[in-house]
Image (cartoon, rainbow, N blue to C red):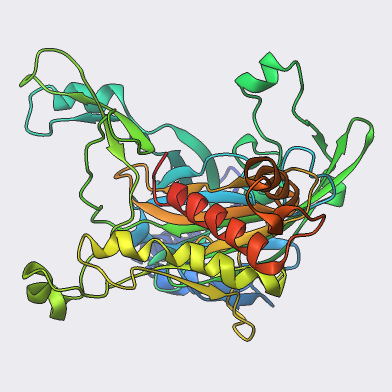
Length: 455
């Protein structure tokens, strides 16, 4: 901090007669002082000051460009957040990329729900707010003013503004702590549920060892940032280590038009409360979770005429190359079995399956932009199909299928018990590829249905 020191000079005059020369010296000093008082200090160049501050703070930094610029200085990660993104909605998701203990959570899973956030700023700090989207109000109603007072977005985190960008269009803050401290919303441990209570079991819990945790790296893209961290914990007296991938994604300003849910149709949904004087009392409603498929602009008229067209953005599932080759083609067929359903609403090739890309350095199955069909090696005999949706509208952003390797045992036992009396092919210790492949195709179609929003 710069300190300004002022030197005060005090002159003492001895008693006695004042000579003409002495008098003239006194007047000269006063004139000089008066002149100094009339001089105005040069105006401070704020742009130059910002540039100096910026360069000093980020000296020797490695800069990654993207949605935000990220400047890496030793072990600190400075985010340069543009002012025009203040007030925009972001989603932060946290996924386990690798783990030393898969008792509760396996690599590829998101233990906690993503968090919706928005940023605001004053002269000293950037504030990260948790966005509240469950409660809605008719904006044309008089009660909207009361609604705003009662449902403001709370501040979740706050960061000191370390500098402005040279052109003052962005704030520079150190957000490193968000990714290497014990933030409950980003925990690698799942929350306990009703089944834990009924079965009298306890979910894993641990205490973070900060000295053994670090940010491994970041990737920045136009609409999202991926942050990988190594997190070390003590669990039940022993070590526990996970690699986590945190995704920050910018959500669209114009949200997808929601579709109301109906309890008679089995869709996963987003619960809402709607305040309006046009109805008697608070309205409880839901938005269903669904993908936003739209025809290409040049195909819009053909689509309206009932012709089959390809969507602007098809649903692409990347299939893990860790899945044995003999099963992977059957899984792809199970994914694409849903194409027939989309043809009923006018889209062809709406959902496609591809292998993990081999030569794409930007591909990361833990990046929220990619929907993946993942292999998980644990003793669990199961498969899961979770999806991640924009809570503002119910738009599904990304889906995952978790293929637990030991589901092979479950499928073997099911087919033997249910069909062995009529099917000699299942009276074996090891099924042939076609028999097991057809079972895995069924599982793929089933789980993809969940990722499309169907309960």
